[in-house]
Image (cartoon, rainbow, N blue to C red; front, side):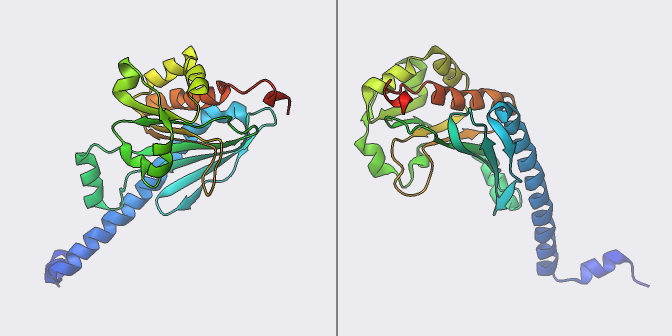
Length: 234
């Protein structure tokens, strides 16, 4: 009776390759889901004080979404966390990501109870591609001249320089941005959302040790918005 390996050798190379690819895809898909769920659970911890509850994680392709139901006291009406893991199911793409030093990412997005009185974009100089589809809007904004590490790491543009400078004068905000400058890819707050998207969106590279700092940065920006006094009475 033939051994099992003799049956394997009798198969055509294409069938063997297909089998290996399918196995690596299924293993990678399982690993991606486990990693994404773990990532989202860790991000949810520093958000507990602002969320009454979290909805069940939903998945669309290789993106995993966690919706927060904010407390009545929270400054946001809705909040969404999106986990974007690397393409582990696709071994060649995953290896290429590693070669290019791409990392797992996550986004924090919110619609605020009180709309922002101005727009500001803080964009990492190493990841300009997050602007895809937004070039025209970005070009209309006014750039804020910066120095030191801010100038080294970020491009900052706004619809209102006075308000933006006032917000960026917040020492806690600047300290958090400095601490997370390697992980922060994009911070986008808009006074008007025309199509899809939310009023405040952000993208971060995943670094477990920096999760709390990135969440704190996101919340501190909301807290530091310089609303006109008359707005707060609305």
